[in-house]
Image 1 (cartoon, helix red, strand yellow):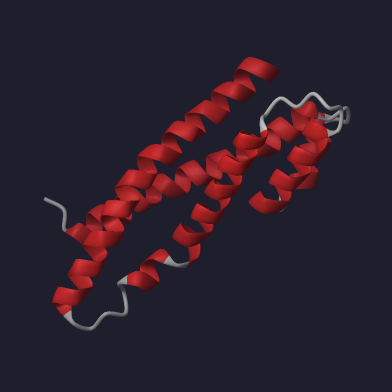
Image 2: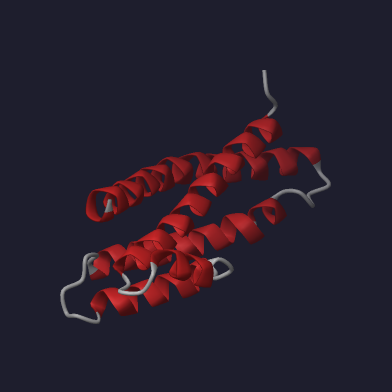
Length: 138
């Protein structure tokens, strides 16, 4: 039986995996949409963060007036980018520095519950985005 903290760490690794895959799929979609060489584009975007990649993709996608992804899709992806920033930079700070065990466990439980809900939602989006890439460009 895992402790709550161990469960949190396992679930955290799942959501971070999904965020990384979403970011990578955005780079693949951008590279596939571009008239330039796919591999050159992937190399260019290798160290680009998710926000920059998303902006570049949206600009290119809308450049011909016939985008693959809707404005709503881009709003959702931007919300995912913000969510990723929370999980990458803030979530541990919600509970790690609590010195009172009861308060620490209470805050950890609250963050863990949020993590479970958001992991399920992000995993669905990651699968959808990967499927979009495969169906559209492969």
